[in-house]
View (cartoon, rainbow, N blue to C red):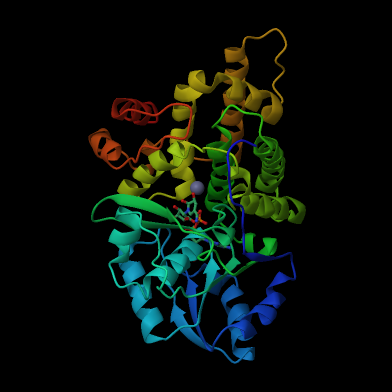
Length: 390
Ligand code: NZQ
Ligand code: ZN
């Protein structure tokens, strides 16, 4: 483990079929006013809203409604959430939903009492939360496995006006105080969202795995997480109500992006930057923006990280390296990943997400360039990857 690092993760997790009851243990720790954050209706349809509201009422809480959080929450919604938080004098923000609700809740938690414009401060200038800014505590009841937002400080906000989708990774003061993970709550996810979540999980791991050349425990952990995900995802697409598979996937998603496996890694995140640019222009589903650009990206950078791609092929995809060059093994690994992506049914090109040739220059403009992976991309290379992904 090279370098120096700090690991701390303050989020308390309650996991399993009976985990919602633990909301009763958490709620007494906070004041009366609870901002109940949720999306565009799924929790009303599947009954989760009713269950959560009943527990809030039984604990004497005053529910401050904040529904309608859209997938890829917008800056306008963030401003609205800040007004709701301040007017309702809220003591706790409870997000019930997927990554969009959890991210949005965290963004509101640091923005409601921020004296400056949060979009500029946190997203354009990447500034930290001022030490004297009151952070409203956040709790999550997760209904979709994918982002890891339930146990991290990430909060991605989209600004359609400036065609930017930007994530700020806040420190551990902003992590959810608690998250409730009931795999059964994910059963009602449409197949498209389920598959998008699966790819998001794999890609979070790849973004951290494809960096560095040292022997690092994090890489071994990640190989195990990827193997578990691949195994369970193939069961879940055939039978979405297989509890064993869905529960493993939910747990894997959390560990894929709760900072643990990033320890000692420079981390890449370039697929996410490409995907976020696609998202900023199309508002497409997050996981699908990643799947649509991934293969072109990985095939492009593979020669710069050949040994790691070879290891990925052998240790994650069971490619037999005997009698093959490193490049052949690495290519076979990416091909195996491609087959898995087809099997789980993710989007394989950006055209399907609404990208046209005329949009490509704008996509390049919206792509932030990261420096932790095997190759720092130029804008020409980014354009080439987008073209290849069409
Ligand atoms: O609007 P609702 O009713 O909530 O419906 C959602 C939405 O339409 C639906 N859904 C969620 N759980 C469901 C369900 N439908 C039926 N049954 C359920 N149990 O699924 C759709 C997608 O939900 P969303 O929350 O948008 O998905 P996801 O969890 O993928 O979150 C995406 C957001 O998270 C950000 C993304 O950029 C995007 O804005 N990310 C956050 C990260 C983080 N905090 O670290 C990292 C990720 O890389 C990602 O960038
Ligand atoms: Zn992601």
